[in-house]
Length: 478
Image (cartoon, rainbow, N blue to C red; front, side, top):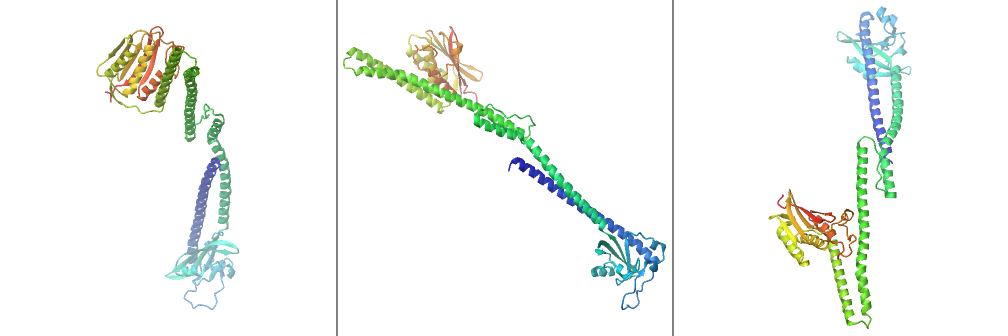
């Protein structure tokens, strides 16, 4: 069962129950009110008839010995010649009984004109209590009110006043029919309106379903749910779904980018490995010849050693890069920058003793990081500066607000802007294939710096040189 049908049925059921309770309450109130009105009219009629009977009626035979059979009833003309008695309203049926319940007076003085009075009712009236009951007279339901007339503490007459319930019953039946038919039509109309409105309300959900289906079929995360309604629950669902699609699109693009980088990485690694392996394979083929001079064999062996060392360096760089990509936990401990930078500069000078490396580091500078990782990054920056410049190299460390900045600057030829944006790409070396290396130094440095919560970037200007900038949070800032 669809949610639209469930909503419509629930709404219709609630409305039907509400109309049932309302109709039942209205019917009950109407039935009770009409009955109370009838009782009030009959009670007033009985009061009037009691007054007339005591004034104009024939005396009762109360106190005389009981007869074997009840006396013949009198007509109203015989019972009383009072004008008030004769003009009493005709819509009410009146009977006068003696204390034993025998008919004393009726309109025509016929015994068959007696109104029903149950034994329980007769006993109640004889006990000087009023009595209400309903009964059938000539197949017509009547409401009968019996009241005792007591004179000097003795029951003289019993007044019965009755009125037909036919009109009331017809009115109530008409009311019940109207409520039933009107309620049924209202429920049917409400079902149709509820079905229409629920369809309009759930239309965005259908669009979400269609969008999700198309995304699954086409893998197009750029699609969005078109919703212009209020920001209710459905609107919030549409907004949340669109936000989720945006995040999925970003994640999908990142995955695509990562896969592209992986493909490029594998291609670059294959290319870098192919050259030394080809060289080794060719030299091994030469060594298999028996007529190679000794000096040529020595050259071949030297080439094989160089290529083996190159392979070892490449594999070590790849392993280091793989560990960094795997999120290897780096230490976060206070590091004294002046001492560490001095040690790095001293080791870098051994690579080219003819070059001058200047160090300017303010005393007391500290950062939180991993000593080995920061040392490796600094050596990578110094090694790049030595390879791509011929002049002096300048290393500075200073505090800038809440940050500590390390700069490794050379004064070489610089890097053009179109190449500068790729310096942190793996295996990227521009067009300078004469400089030894694999293009993994700066990518390794970037991964290590980001693992310590720092930042790394490079600035360069053609013919003026380049500078690698490292930034960290001051360890003295809590």
